[in-house]
Image (tube, rainbow, N blue to C red; front, top):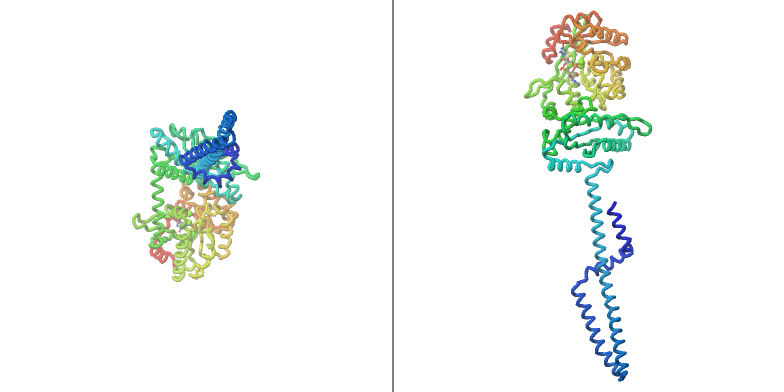
Length: 552
Ligand code: C2E
Ligand code: MG
Ligand code: MG
C-alpha cells in the first residue's frame, strides 16, 4: 500500500500523467542523447554564433556610422543582444535536453516502483494464504527453517492440525460455508495465540502452528487445552450453530527430527493417531507411532497382492440350534494366509482394508466364495444349511451391492432364505439412511439379516426395534462372564427377552463352556456358536464335521 501511495505522489508532483503520454515519443530520444557529443555541439554552436556575431555586425556598424560615440553604443547594444540571444538559445537547448533527462529519470523511477510493487504482490501470493490471510505452507517452512538455523539450541514444537468432520460443513452447507468456517478458525488461532507463536494454513482444513522456544510438554499441553476450548465454541452460520473440534499431532525439534520434512511428517503421523483414537485431542509424536504407520502401509501394499495371489481363504464355524444341538448353519470367516506371517486374523486386516478402500473387492470375493460353497453343500444335500457372511458397512453402502448379491444368488442358484448377511450396529449407523434402504431391499430378496456383535456398540433398543433384522448376535464379551457375573447374566437375560418380544431370534457368540451353554439354554437363547462346539475350520474339515454330525 505504501508503495502505491509513493508512486501516486510522484505521479502527481511531476504531472506525470500528462507526461507519460509524452514518454512514449520522448523516451527514445532521451535514451539517444550522448552527453559529450551534446556538450560539444552546444559549445560549437556558441563558438560559431560568437565568431559570426563578432565579425559581421562590426563590418555593418562601420558601414552605418563613423561616429565613435554611436559606434560605442551600438557595440554595447550588440554585445548585450549577443548575450541575450545566446542565453535564450542555450536555455532552449539545455532545457530541452534536461526535460528529456527528467523523463528518462522519472520513467526509471516509476518502473523501479512498479517492479517493487510487483515484487510485493508476488511475495504476498507466494507466502500468504488468500482465503484466511494466514501465512501459507511456504512461509511456514521458511519460518521453521529460520528457527532451526537461528535458535538451534532451543526446543520448538510443531503442531499439525486437522479440523474434525470439516467435510460435514462443506457437504451440508456448501463450499462457501466451508470457506467462512476456515476464516473463522484462522481468526480463532490468530487471536488466541501468543505473539511469538506462528500459525499457518497448509491447505484444505489443515493448519500448522510453531511454538518457538518451548519449555516442557506440560507448557504445550496447557496452551493446547486453552486453544481446544476456543475452537470448540459454537460457530454460527446462517442462524445454525456448528460445534467443531480439531485433531492435533505434535512433534518437537530437535528430538523428533531436525529437518522440516521429518518434523512435519512426524507431527502428521501423531495427528492421524489423534484422529484414529477419538478425534478432538492432541498426540505427541512417538517412534512407535511411525512403526505402526509403516506396518500399516506395508500391510496395505501386501493386501493389494493378496487377492491376486489367492492368499485369502474362508474358514467355517458351525452355528447350532441350542434346543436340538443340531448344526443349522455356518459362519464364513475370512483368513489371510500371509506368505511370511502365516495366518493373519481378520481383526487385524479388515479395518486396514476398510481404511484403504479395498474392502469392497475383498467383500465381493468373500460373497462369491461363500455362495459357491453353499451351492456345493446344497448339491451334497445340505439344502437347509444356513450360511452367514460378514458384510462391512462400507460394502453395504457401496452402489450396486444389492444387485451383486442378487446376481450371485442367481449365478449359484442357491436358496435365499438360508443366506444370512451379518452387519454391525456401528456399520449401519455410519450411513443410517442408505443402510436402511439397502437392508430393506436385501430382505425383499428373502435374504436374512443378522445384527452382529450386539452389546459392543451403541446397543440401542431403538435400533433393535427399527432396523429390518431377523437375528441378533449377542457379543461374546457378555457370554464370557455370564456364568460368573450376575450383571452380565441379567443383561443377557433381558436382551434375550427383549429380542423375542420384538419377534427376532437370538444367537450367542463365543460359547466356550458348558456353564455358559446351560445358562443360555435356560434363558431360551435360540442359537449358539463357539469353541465349545468347534473353532472355525477350513472347508474340508468343516465338510467332514458336517458328514459326521448331520444326516443329509
Ligand atoms: P465376528 O463376525 O463376530 O466373528 C466371530 C469371531 O469370534 C471370529 O473371529 C471367531 O473365530 C471368534 N470366535 C468364535 N467363537 C469363539 C469362542 O468361543 N471364543 C473366542 N475367543 N472366539 C470365538 P475371527 O474369525 O477372528 O473374526 C473376527 C471378526 O472379523 C469377525 O467377528 C468379523 O467382524 C470380522 N470378519 C471375519 N470375516 C470377515 C469377512 O469375511 N468380512 C468382513 N467384513 N469381516 C469379517
Ligand atoms: Mg460375524
Ligand atoms: Mg460377532
